[in-house]
Figure 1 (spheres, helix red, strand yellow):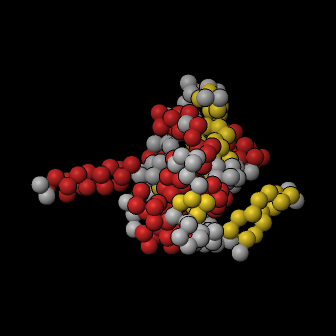
Figure 2 (figure 1 turned 120 degrees about the vertical axis):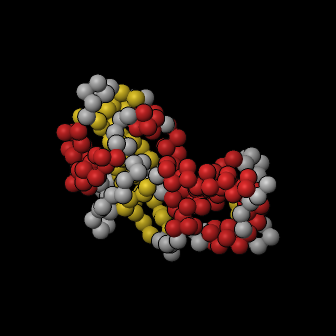
Figure 3 (figure 1 turned 90 degrees about the vertical axis):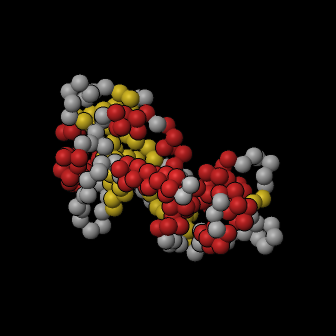
Length: 225
């Protein structure tokens, strides 16, 4: 089943009204990146071929793709360009979401400077900070504004995504301010657990956890030799 999204009374796009598991959602961008990496001459692609290329379970990939697309054909697979379009629409990459970033330190500035977010449907409007030496500067054309302008900009531009790259001791207070400003989803790059009201999504990017996983993998790998 498909449904239409409305924006200021105008029909903007069709999106599948399907729900998928969090695990499936985490795998879909990997499939999309692989499909985009293939040569233009590749017209058709099967779930099996994708699974083999990514060293993934065939059944998992087939079920994942079937959950967001019904265009696959037996013994033929999917039209690559069509599947790319379906994945982009399902993931929302074709409908850019505005975001603000709070904490323009080294990590924050790196994220502001990264132009690859656009292809994933994310547009960072501006950064915010309290450092007088940082405020009113720019990173790749994106302004870094004082914190007292955060709420006004978020409400005026109807921003719903906040990116948090502040020191841990300030994370909860800034998160509270983002929510007060109308933010509904927080991309948290701090190592702090955030307490948020029901209906607010927090996506944690804890580098300490990722490093622990990498270190443990290496330890297990070399302990078997």
